[in-house]
Image 1 (cartoon, helix red, strand yellow):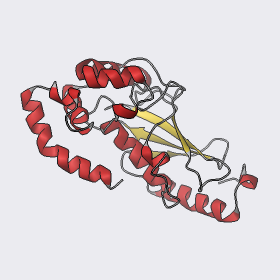
Image 2 (cartoon, rainbow, N blue to C red):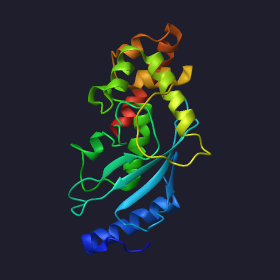
Image 3 (tube, rainbow, N blue to C red):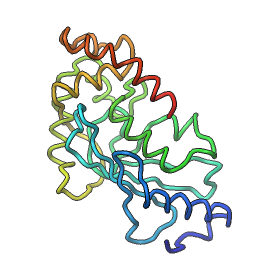
Length: 218
């Protein structure tokens, strides 16, 4: 990897970045594919994230970029979706709201872990801390409509044969199975989960505890 912007980082940070990027290239987390930088900018790291099965994002490929500041790893990277997506925790310009990049940040967090957490966010949105207020409100009040919009946005902008595009906003939708999975994962007692058909709700209840425990480990 070339050394663009290396002057902004300490030798220890540069060594860490080379190591982590090398690990991403050799063995990306499940559902993630490392994307080499065309400019070899050491301060920007990208992966393509596969939309998880059973969510409104299934069948899509979403390019995500992490941007490192000069005081990394004391401060967390900033995360952005470059592919348009309809999601409560993704803002109009693609910025991502996730605790791992905010209050839960520690210097021990790796790039691979960050991309893994962002993919989990596609399974478990957190509308309580939304950056897209419309998507967050719709998720809570009418999951079926949220799912439809998220699925539509995925089909238009994130089909696997499409190049990544900038900025996130607008509407899309989801499959019936995906609505069940995402709604249940979003949180206990959510309006979306309560609105699910009884059969789906029973199915989700069995898996919810395991999913939430797994996500706490991220």
